Length: 186
Ligand code: 6PG
Ligand code: NI
Image: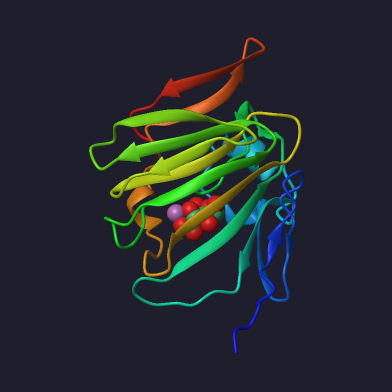
């Protein structure tokens, strides 16, 4: 006989998942060594301060399977630089990903293997198609939590090491304005 499965759901206003098994990973200030430009400002923040949380639905793993995760990035700055995720290439470089803006406002910083960087505005309803071979980082430039839904191949993995020298752009508050700066090294 045909069964009806109860799917998980997401509350579009808050990005909260309703599901039986949600795995949650908290990234705190102390985990983000080397990420923010202003080291003194970063050191002044208690290392247990949560910066972002990623909640993942329970799904199958393996070639052809997909992961679904929600990133909740708290508003704030370290010095003049807006809160952001660590950012990564996928370990399987050629694997892409899709992000959907759910709540808050911010930017998606993208960068190819030649260090060419570009930005997309993230807002409720925005759809971001991240091509393969493209590093990605969320930046919260707003005053509320930035929540973005992501769907990516379970085989993609993460490569953080290749960005040890940082992205080619930083987003800061300068003269009361949100500004993107090109940087040579970190
Ligand atoms: C992924 C997604 C996404 C990402 C989080 C946290 O490939 O898993 O891009 O879930 O991991 O937004 O960002 P960092 O992994 O860069 O800390
Ligand atoms: Ni990714």
